[in-house]
Length: 337
Image (tube, rainbow, N blue to C red; front, side, top):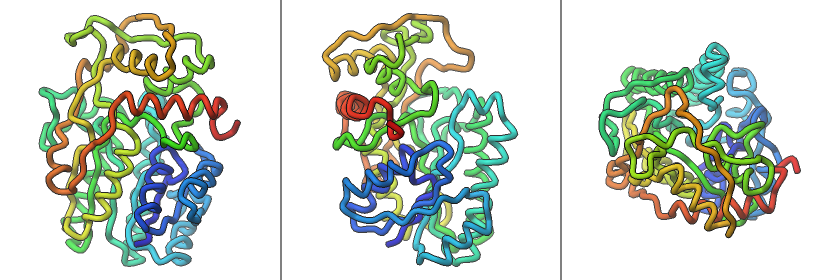
């Protein structure tokens, strides 16, 4: 099967490309390189020993996207492209709505014209907002709290309507929880632009000496150690979730959604201590006040993905910290370095 990966040069995209290639699929990557590096794709080729067809194209460019489908025989698409920083989306909502929704609409129109109607969407646990109960199941109430989350929720609703209007579409939306870690080779990993928005990349940069200390936002939540609890999923497990979804598209008429998570919560302090075990050193941190909009606990019920897709997380937070530190220490400047 030939799979088109939009946003395929990014963190999740490169790891997904590795798993697809190692499973025998062909991979075509479309990426604007706004938040990624072409070097990452060269690393994918080193890991797999296989070539990746790459097009530097923005998914909102309809003419360029048509050209990609004309040049390649595409069987299915995994749509990963989009802006993803929650805080930035609050500051720049129009930019997020225009880019993320326009990219999806342009992609679907291009796919439809090419007769390609198998699609896996990168969605997010942000569609659940502040959950009423955990673990979170797929039929939980949906309630987003920021423009980024809204773009994911609107994307799912667009695909609901598309699959209802045309039953020949086969679509799976994957609601990620919190991807962390890196490929065990140390050749690819998360390379955030500027100050990291997420916990583990920030911890990794503290460990590497690029940041002075970690700020722990709140230690007075109703959790075992007072810090926020999230479901942290090794990025290789997440990549394998995409592989499982692609392999099951033929069994999935219409539009279905699945959580990808471990089903277990890890607190901020537990995550910090796991990274300390990986580095063998204590890491500096400061406890500060809660951030507006943060919630206490969020973790998945991944039962449906296990039942329908045959997928479950195999790797631990300690595995992820070990692999993330191998990547960070071996690539202190990221791909640009």
